[in-house]
Image (tube, rainbow, N blue to C red; front, side):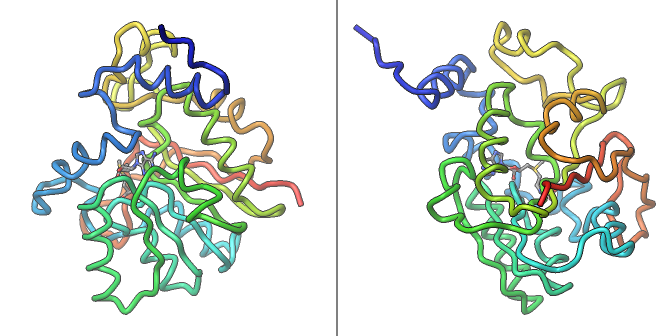
Length: 244
Ligand SMILES: C[S@@+](CC[C@H](N)C(=O)[O-])C[C@H]1O[C@@H](n2cnc3c(N)ncnc32)[C@H](O)[C@@H]1O
């Protein structure tokens, strides 16, 4: 008989398991899916280019954020981690996928960057490998691959790892035609899959991150191919500050 639910983490794990194994993009078991995704580096995936997000560059240009200790959450091949390192941040970067971390490490070596990479589930590593407080937690494209219940783990991670007075920034799918899935939260559980990722509205982001203070929330600028920055207009960009 299965009567194993005792903690919130047990419930979250139960909800993870309601999704089909093929739909998993966020647990340790999803590492193989992401490894396949990153296997062919010549694929025309816009975020494979080693360019930082235009919004991240803009926060720094306007001195909305300044160098300190940073965590790149779901770092992929490391383009934003590399950028932060180049500007004097002390950077930790975490990703599920060994292929992504391997690629990011190669880029870091080539650039002479000193980034501490971690391979694994960021939520499981929070408080163990990912320790202390960060002045900036940056997430480009990871949050929208989480099922609704994992927002609880996400907010707990921010609570544990973001320093008072520190900043949290993310880019995630917009609602509407070109963004993520507009289905209501409950539908993802009924369908047992995430339909490519979840759309968010500005209101939903403000509600989810309501413990933080909004600094800026806007569409990402569309950057032309020759730009030094990554920019796609189907993404929201948001910068929040934790009260000191
Ligand atoms: C769309 S990719 C974005 C990669 C990178 N941030 C970029 O923009 O170039 C999302 C990344 O989140 C990672 N990811 C998803 N769930 C994760 C988790 N629980 N812990 C760590 N990384 C995770 C995936 O492995 C994947 O590389």
